[in-house]
Structure formats: structure tokens, C-alpha cells
Length: 484
Image 1 (tube, rainbow, N blue to C red):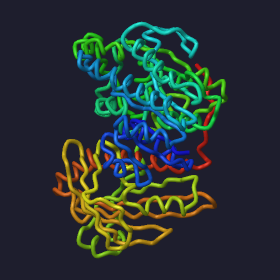
Image 2 (image 1 turned 45 degrees about the vertical axis):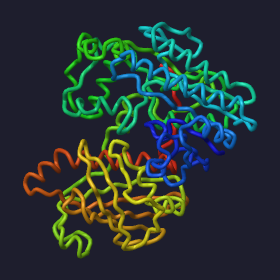
Image 3 (image 1 turned 90 degrees about the vertical axis):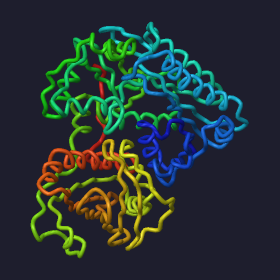
Image 4 (image 1 turned 180 degrees about the horizontal axis):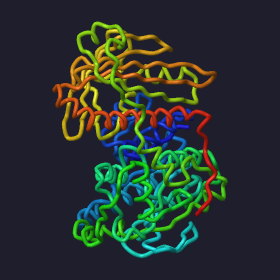
């Protein structure tokens, strides 16, 4: 299929584009900055500008539309201007999409759109499924109108609307804001912690969208939530266990109300929403329970150790820039080695494997032909600090692996070996990074406290991304989920 995605460069959209490419779909991103789409989403993603004219033309030439547009709701104060943006980013964008679908001469077969479990309002301990009545308040009214705009496109086009819970994933979404204080041992429950949290792992959410594209049973409204919602208190305990850090610093309700005003209701209220409609279709979840979901997200990828003296690869580069640490990771993919290596042969795809917060930006437009001796310049951001990085391809072995080094950038030494090995129709991808941090004894402290955990998270994000793109090994399948 050709699939048009709005909100493609966002937290969910970026993961979704990778997942759709695995099934052979061609992804078209409706984006404010179409010139930046390739560096953010990969070389294969097409882009159209975010105008109504371009939208109408694009919809005439696609088989499906997935509408993810909408500004974040939680964690910001709802000023009058903010409310207007929250409404317009959802209703106007969805209205434009639905109108273009209705008036298209060649209509797409399916429209998938989003809403939120905020539709139900704050319902205390009431168990909520798709048949439950609408709640009260600003969010409930917004979700009702949002869904109505999408469902207005029903007719020749099949329409499904997904009420999202809190989407959990690496380096983004709600969890991205929660993790810094929890990692510092300053996390804790919000208010009394008894409010319910309906949540879903990012991998499960994009799997639902991928299935709904081709399964004609997906019509109407679905709760896109894990089958086992938890209270905020239990979520806090689970995150504490996953991080192996205490979470004993609660945030009082009054502090949240002073900080966020009326939007504090999103944090202090909640919904016990369950995915009854999905379970009725036999849908299974990779991450049905919160402990396993959080462990899959927060655990770092690979392990860094002291680089054995004199045992690094033989190269003039490493003889001049002796590495002090080595990081090794291993990822199993359910795809043949030819497909995997072809993806890594395009430097433009690196942005799709890099956390959005790092703002990976090539300083010269591609495409590039990968070869030994190629140098590539790009900028990245580490925390608030923008940095320039020049990399050189030291060796290039098609179908087997390659090595890149940092010629200039933040590291004193950086030598990254990528190896690919076929096991039947699967691919084993292994990374070995030999590196050093500058600044002598101070650098050793920076490496232990900041660099090592950061690399674990970055390579974890990368592993998640390539699993979305190519599929996880058969050893890690889905788990049947039952509603709590």
C-alpha cells in the first residue's frame, strides 16, 4: 500500500514509519518541513508539504491514511492560547484529512485516526471499555469532537479511531519526561497515586496500526491500551523496580495544580480503560503487563567495559587515539541479511535510528554511495549542547559489515565496528564501539556518570528501531493479553 501519515515525524509517527516499511508499504509523510523528512525518517519515506492542496493531491494517490496529528496535552499549562492550539491541532487537521478523503475522486480504502482515553473523563475506579459513556470536562469534549471529525469520512472508506492511553517508549512521550527524576532517585507517585493509568507500549501501538490497515474488521472505535491498566502508585513501583532506584519523593496534588493549573487534572485523574474490542478480535500484545514493558524500555542495550590494553583492532587510528572503553551490543532480526545490510548501506537512514532529541542533521544532502574513505558531516545535540561530527568509513565489506570512525567530534576516540551474520533467514547484527572521552581524570567521571548511560540508551533506541523495521527474532513473540 501507499500510506499517507500525518504527524509522521512525532514520537509515534517515527516508529510507525519503520513498522510500515517492514510490510513493504510506501510511506508518504505530510510534513511542515518536507526537506527534512529523509534525514528524520529514512531514505524511503516520501514527503509532501503540510498544505491542504498538497494533502488533497496526496490522498488521491494513496491507499490508506493514518492521522496522528496533535500537540501534546499533558505537562503544559492550559492557557487560553494553548487550548486553542490543542483544539486546532486535532480538529482542524482531522477535518482537513476527512474532507480530502470524502471529496477524493479515488478514495483511500482506509482511514485510521486517533483520539484518547480522555474521552471517558476522570472515572475513578470504573472499568471502561468502548461501550462506556463519554465523560465530562475539556478533554472529553475535545475527544468527542475529534472522533466525530474522523468518523465523518466513513462510507466508501473504512474508518477506525483509536483512543490512545499513555504511550510508553524510549526517548520520548510521557516516559521521556518522567525518567530524569526517577533515574536521579527523585521520582515518586503523583498526588495520592490512586488514579488509574491506561497505557500502551509503543511497539504494541504501531503493531495495531499495521494490522488495522489490512484487517477489514477494524471499524469504529477501539481503546488502544494494554489489557492491564495500573494505578499511578503501582506504575511508580514498577518503574522503580525497572530502574533499580528508589521512588520515594511524591509530588503533592497542590504542587501539580499550582504548576499546571487545570491541566493537572490529566495527571491527578485517570481512566481504567481496557481494550475489549481489540481482544474480541483476538489481538495479542508484546507487552501486556507493566513490569515487562518498562524493563524493555529502560534497560540499556549492551554493556560497556574497560578496553583491554593492546587488544583493540589494529589500525593507525586506534594506535594514535587509544580507546579506554568498549561497548558491545547484539540484535537479532527476523529478516534476511541482504535486506538488513541494504538499509544500513544508506547513510540517510541513520536519522531514523537516532533519538529525536539528538536532532541528527546531515550537513550535506544525500544520497551517498557508501565506500571506504567516505566522510560524512552532520550535527547532533547532546543534552542542550549542539555538536558537529565528522565520520569516516574506514572499511566497507558489502553483506558482511563496515567500520566508521569519528574524525572530529566530542570523543577523543571513536571506532565503531558493525558486523552482520546470517542465521538461516534471520540476521544477527553486532556492534562493537571502542571509545575514549577527553579531559583526562575528569573525563573518566563524565564517562561513567553521563556517557556510558547515554550510549546504553542510544543503542537501545537503535535496537528498538531496527526491530520495528525488520521484526524481532522468532524467540520473542507476542503474548496473549487478558483485561485486568
